[in-house]
Length: 505
Image 1 (cartoon, rainbow, N blue to C red):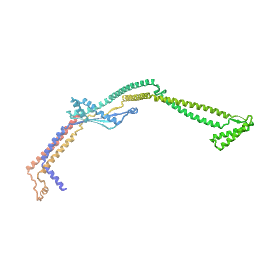
Image 2 (cartoon, helix red, strand yellow):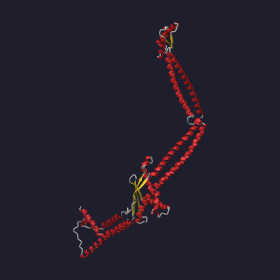
Image 3 (cartoon, rainbow, N blue to C red):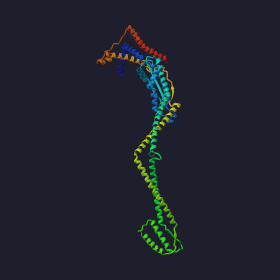
Image 4 (cartoon, helix red, strand yellow):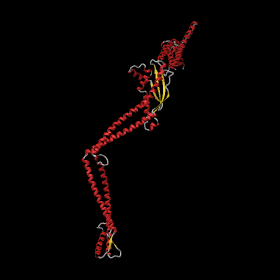
């Protein structure tokens, strides 16, 4: 700790011993620094905040609300587009010295660097414009920054109120032209279709077309075959019932008991066959032998022995009716098969006409679909245009008008002036300390001992005469005056800076 304290004392003594060199260096550095700070032009900033409502409830209801992020980016790009910046240059003092296209490009590029558009929220934007140098006074630069922001707001308002409607009108005109072209193509396709249909009506789709006739014949044939299967099944059922029903019945009390027994045996035989028993079944063989015996006995009997069976007669009538229906269905099936064969043969005999008909209908359907889609799109665009015109889908409102700069945004000249003073004093002290390190002088006995390695017995104190002491204090006053003058110059520069700011305000 003692060595550090001694080193600090040695450094301070070296600086104080060469204080005039430090003061001169401080003055030189401060004058140069303050001159450089004075040459840095002031930059003034003007800000404004605008509210842009991208869409409203009605726009979202009819489906014209777009991507919010994309719309916000579109607003930012619109504000800082080259076309709009060129309008700003021509409408403000920036365009006074622009006489050629190259100069205009440079002015637009410089303005683009000095403009910032920041999205603070979804619909809130802050516009900032910086203005400096360019040969203008501080007051002119401050007014120029405000004029740039105001002009950007005016241009954006005009383009969203008028430009959007013009764009929608151009779009609708283009859609109308496309619809007219598609309508002509569709009318030509309709005329071609009608001419082909007049010559080959059966090849065209419709009620009387060849394809529809074939499909109708096939459907009817499937129905007839289904009905025929049902009729065959019903006829087989009637035949089974008829085989088990006797043609006559025995009258009680009348002669001819053999005939009655024969009728009963025949009925039993029919019932067995109805159950599916074959002629080789033992019961069937025995009953058939009994029927044969009773038949011989009944034949030998004379006189009436029975009367016709009404159920048998009714079954015979139903059988005849169903046989007639089955024959009619078989005839209809044969007729349909022949007709279907003729239609199919005609279809394959004229493949060129079929292909031409398919191509004409395909072209017509494609053109009709395109026309209908364009018509729907045109009506949707028309509705969007009416909404944007009546309700102004992009609503624009200035929240904070462009501010009038009252102080430079950059540089912060008072801080820079203080920093120059600090740097100057530091440079003077550093120079004095560096010169002291280069010379082989020792400020304390301890420093001499460390440098020589020998013990120092004693030291001689400085003794000044009255005249020397008077001169020392005079020089000290001059030195203090030099430091005070340096601070005074800083104060004057600060006063001048604030006076300039007051003149701008």
